[in-house]
Image (cartoon, rainbow, N blue to C red; front, side, top):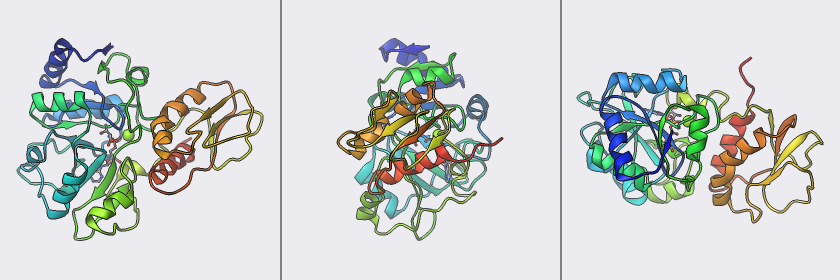
Length: 312
Ligand code: TXA
Ligand code: MG
């Protein structure tokens, strides 16, 4: 069920979280499936509901840097990035304190924690009032397209309590930066570009997805039901077309990520448009080439995973 964020529904949401249940929560990137990060059973419910492999750890959300300091070892790079980008679409991976009360299941037994402060009034209100960290992966079944509206969440989880925050403004998940060693690593491209991060802490090591570092990044992911074909200039008759920039294509099943080639607009539209094209009676989805600069890196990353070979 979808609820407008009234004082009453906020109260109900907090009540559900306290008793260890899940809620659908808007953030500025995508909707999250949130639970009290300190309750093992509540965190277990996230994995169960999403059908997510338990080796894939969750991002922990808080309302202030101070709220994380009992859970992680803070460092100078974290301080500078938090000042520059929080609240906002940046997740920092830091060494976990042994004394942290966050469920070990949430971090999948790793000795690090991924943390962020979302820049969304509803998420911040809930975090502030709940006064404990929330574990929140994207609110979609594992491997499927991330949700950017409350009704996307409802499609995957019809019985979930969902707070309505309208369309998420960024539309693509947070950038994940690993600060656990002396060099900094980009683990997932996302809503803040590599260049923006490097302007604050200097060069990032090459984008590297290792099983240990960002387990969720390996499989086919963000996947529509239809097959996806990338870097297409001329779609075939049986395909829907996801264009980027001006196009002469005149087929029926056309959506344009950004007619003006604005990568921000394209990021905000990506998941919604993939979902819409996935509903058309066609054989597949063809996607136009997207430049690899700025947010384009994150867009290409999501599209490559959407097009990746599926498990049989
Ligand atoms: O924008 C976002 O980050 C959204 C919103 C809801 O906050 N959340 C999100 O969560 O994208 P999820 O679960 O879909 O993706 C979390 C990613 C996974 O790739 C996971 O492997 C990685 O974060 N991750 C979590 N904890 C980690 C850790 N300790 N070390 C490395 N990677 C970690
Ligand atoms: Mg996800």
